[in-house]
Image 1 (tube, one colour):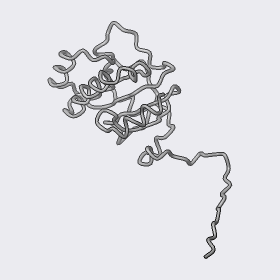
Image 2 (tube, one colour; image 1 turned 30 degrees about the vertical axis):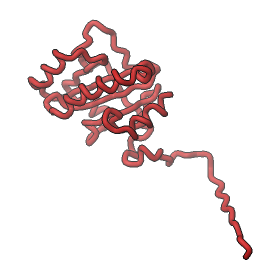
Image 3 (tube, rainbow, N blue to C red; image 1 turned 90 degrees about the horizontal axis):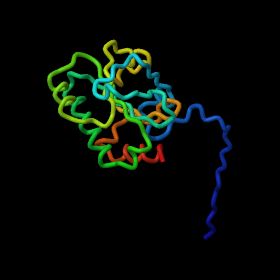
Length: 170
């Protein structure tokens, strides 16, 4: 019996403008989008520290509402993740941006936890509006040194996403 093998060679243009990595398939409109971070954000917990929103490092940017219990609980998840991943923490900056009406639960967590990252308050929702984030108002983003979105998803409770974060930052 003779076995035939076929080799199909596809030659494609080097431009990959439509390429969306596997882990960004659900967010093709966000892949590579640049997030604008500005100084209108109010630092709630690290008031004495200068916050560099334009650093040339990778950043994890978490967004959520002050009056959303799961969003506030994500503050603690984020801190736990960073404490258990010290080497990774040294390579990135983390910012937690909150919106809306502050709640007692939010104020309590902010007061009783020494978060290692700045919690920034956006009283005018300007971050969501400027970046046209719409349905992504409770998301976690990994952005590169140019503030371009690399990943969308939380590494705090998803080992697959955590792996992608760590691969991206190396």
